[in-house]
Length: 318
Image 1 (tube, rainbow, N blue to C red):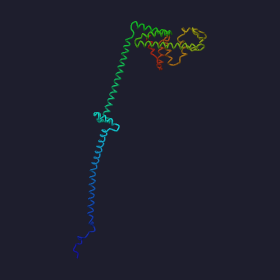
Image 2: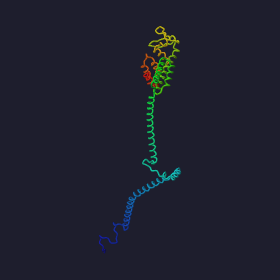
Image 3: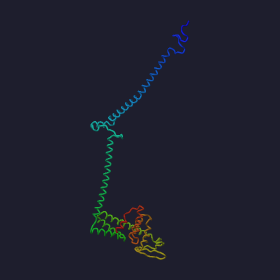
Image 4: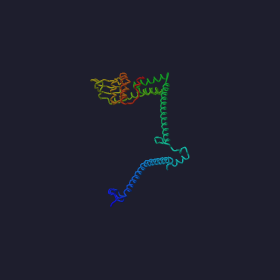
C-alpha cells in the first residue's frame, strides 16, 4: 500500500519539470562571471581617461625637458661659441623668445636697426633741408654780391653791345663783348644773363650760315615766295637777281626783305621743331617780324621736346 499521496512526489524522486541538480551551480557561475566582466568594464572606463591624461602630461614634460636641453646644449658647430659664452657669463644666458618666436636679442637688434634707419632718414631729410636753405641763402648772398654802381653800368653796356652786334650779324664783336661781360659778372644771375645772349647769338649765327649755304646752289632755281613762283637768275657777291612776273630785279643782300631771307634759308632747314629755334632767333632780330612770332616758334619747339635756353626771358631783358 502506498503511503504517499498521489499529488505529492516522494522526497527522493525527481520531477521531470525541475532542473537538473547541477544547473543551479552553472547559473550562479555565469552570473558571477557577468558581474566580474561588468566590473572590469567599469574600472576600464574609469581608468582610461586617467591614463590618457597621464600620458599627455608625461609627453608634455618630455617635450619641455628636451626643449630646455636643446637651448642649453650647443650644436657641434657652436662649441667655440659655448666656450666663449662660458668665459663671459653674461653672454651665456639663454635667449628668451617673444610671441613671434624670435629671440628677444634678435627683436631688440631689429628694433635698433629700425630706429637707426629712421634716424638716418630723418638726418637725410634734415641735411637736404639744410642744403636747400644753404643754396637759397647762397643764391641770395650771390645776388646781393652782384655788380653795383659803375661796374653794373659797364656790365649792362657790354650786354647791349653784344645784342646789337648779333642783330647786325657782327658775331666777332658780339663774342668780344660777351667775354668782357663774363669776366665782370659777379653773381649767378649776371652769369645767366651772359649765357642767354651767348646762346642767342649762336642760334642767329647758325641761321645766317644756313642762308649762305643756300646761296651756293640757288642760281637757276625756282623759289616759292609771297604766293608766287620766282626764278633766281644769278647770285653774285654783291647781291642776287630774281625774275618775277617777267622782269628781273636785282637786290643787294641787305635789301632783301626778311620774308625773302627766310625763304632762302629754309632751303637748308628741315621742317622740324628744332629748326624753329633758329628761325625764331632770326625773327627776334628783325623788327618786321616782332617778338611775338619768335616766342611762338620757341614755344612750339619746346612743346615738341626740343631743349634750349630761356630765350624768351632774353626778350624781356633787352
